[in-house]
Image (cartoon, rainbow, N blue to C red; front, side, top):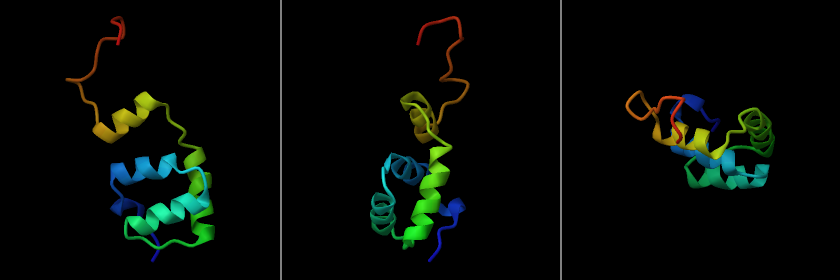
Length: 77
């Protein structure tokens, strides 16, 4: 079953981004209820390289930040 990216949660995406190999991604997908081929996993890994986020960006994507969480740029974080 191919993965519809719209069905993935932010948490699943964050887990996938931490995978270092296609095999790790295949194991994660299976644990999350998806079956993907090695070719699909390699394609997803190639896509994920374009979305290399730092820890702060990962937290923002996973937990979401909004105007109430934001600090003015002139104040230290």
